[in-house]
Image 1: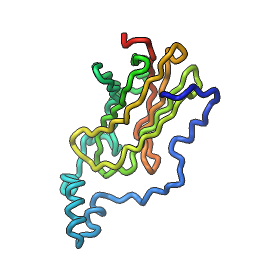
Image 2 (image 1 turned 120 degrees about the vertical axis):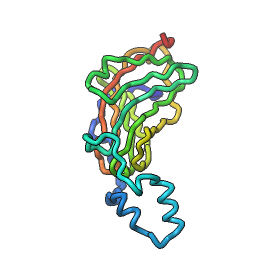
Image 3 (image 1 turned 120 degrees about the horizontal axis):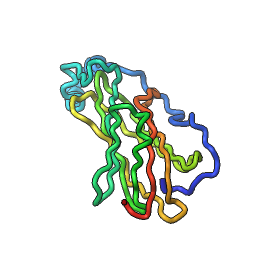
Image 4 (image 1 turned 30 degrees about the vertical axis):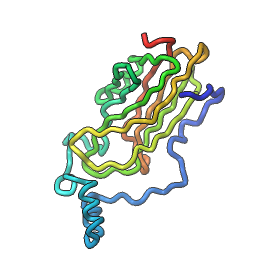
Length: 199
């Protein structure tokens, strides 16, 4: 979000294009069965997968998705965390506008559950727009996660909010939680306003 506004529209279909070809998806059972003769590798898998080896981890039995994105949290030192609830109707989120003080450093934390199977190569893609023009894009490699009944999270590195009269005002954001296989786990829009102060 610290970049200078771009005067040109960008194609919205370049989210995760790269020359990287992800490996074939394997079930937890297949991963556990492979390399059984390698003691150190077997112990590593046990440490990584935990209870997922012995049981199928299901957080929401009626939900077939492997990744259940629950919250986006804006974290800035000295401020109360601002929480965007992603567990309901995400089409309503643009009406709740975050205020961000110009020039501050902040992070974004995504909280989610993983169920059924291991998810590889999770990515968080965020595009920021002002008056319909894309002014910033960031892609964060979130990583690979085994199913757990506990909430898991990823926090972005520190970002600098822009400062100065030119940058104050309203922005809209399109956020996408995806993976190596380009599964769209959740896509949502939200908004924030850069002000001279938090109020």
